[in-house]
Image (tube, rainbow, N blue to C red; front, side, top):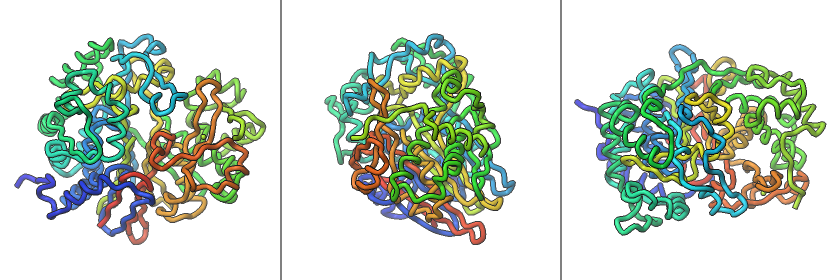
Length: 569
C-alpha cells in the first residue's frame, strides 16, 4: 500500500491544532522529551509535527528533517526561505559513527563577470523601509540555489521513506491554505508594491483584486502545490533541467540577469567529511569550507576560552563579560575581509581554516584584540530556518536552510509558486572573490557536539545574528553547564547595528532582558529591541536536540520567540 503522509491521514484534529499554533508567538522555548524520536524547528511548529509523522511512519532523521524543511517554506509562503534557496546539512550516521556534511549552498552565475556592479544593498539609516533594498529590481541579483537538489541527494543517501511521501504535508498545506500570521503579515506589508511588479507573482501571492493578504486570512498556493507534485514524481531535474528551469532563466534574463540553463543543469551538491575541532572537553563537528560558518563557529568558542570568557561570570550578570562576548562574536567579520585587509590589521597572522581551528591561533588573536586590533569600531556609548531531527536509531540530522533574502526580495520573481531570492543584491564583494559559476561561501552554523566520542547535541542556527546566538548557546551548554532549555531561554544579545555612514557599531539586546547595570558597565553603546521587532534587529535563532549517551533519552528545544515548536515521543 502506498504510504500517505498527507495530513488527512494524521490523527483527528492534529493538523487543525497545528494550523492554529501558527498564530502563536512564544516568550520562552518550546520543549519536548521522549525516548524514540524528536524534531525541533526555529519557525513553524506545524512543520515539526509533519517531521514527527515521517519518523512515526518509519522514516529516518533525514526523512523527518527534509519533510519539515519543505513544510516550513510553504507555511511562510516562500518569503524568508525558498525551494530555490540553499541548505546546509550535518548528519550523524549512527551505524558507522561518521558525520557527513552536505553543502547545497549558492552557486554564482557563470556569465556574471562584473559582480561589483550588481544593483542592491540596503539603506539601514531609514529603518524598516530601508530593508526593501536600494536600486532597481535586477535579474543579476539571482543566484543558483541548491535546496531541492539537496533534498533529493540527502534522501537518496540516507532516507528510507518513498521520496514522494516527503512532499505530502507540503502539497496539502499549499493546496488547502495556510494562515497568515504576524510575521507573514509583516512581510506582505513590507513588499506590497514589489509583489505587484510581475503578473505571475501578483497572481500567486496577492488577492485577485491586487490587495495583499492580512493577519488571520488563509493563503492558498495552488501553483506551488502543482510544482511540488511534479518534483515529487520527476525528481529535482524538473527544477534544474526541465520546463521550470526554462521559465526561471527567461524571467531572470528578462530582468537583465545572466543566468543560463547551463548554470542550473551543472549544479551539484557537495558531500564531505565534517570539520572537527576540540573545544575544551567537547568536540564539535560542523560544515567544512567552502562553507564559512563552521570555522567561525569554532573560532568563537576557542576565543571564548583564550580570553577567559568561558570561565568568568555570565554576560547577563557582568558588564565586562558582556563587552568581551560581544567583541568575540563580532569577529565573524573576518570572513568578509580580503586577505590584504586582514594582514593590515593582524600583520604576520595566518588565517587558513586549519589554523583558525587551533587554540594557539585563538590565544594569539585574543592578545592582539586586547591590544586594540579589531576589524570594527563601536559608536560612542549612549543598538532563515532551522530543523534538527533524531530518529530511533540515533541518527541526527541538522539542517539550516535560507533564501538569504529580505522577504521575497526586491525582484519578487515567482516561478510556478517558487520564490526566487535576490541574494546577490548584498553579496557583491563575496561574489567577486570567487570564480564565476562556483560555490559562494555561506555563513550557516550547523553541527553536532560530541563528548567522550559520543554525540550528545545536534544544533542549527539562523537569522542575521546566527553567529552571535550560536556562540552564546554553545557556551551556555559547554561552559556554563546549562540545560538545553536554560541555554535558549537565557537572555541573548543580537548582532550589532552598523551606522551606514561611519561603520560604527551599536550593541542590540532584547528589551527588558538585560539589567541596566550590566548594559552600562559594558561600556558599549546599546539599544533595546522589542520582541516583535527582533527578526529585523539582527536576532539570532538557535535550536537543538540533546541525547543522553547512556539512556538515549531525548530533549528537544525550539526558539524562545515566534511560532517555533519542539516535538518528541
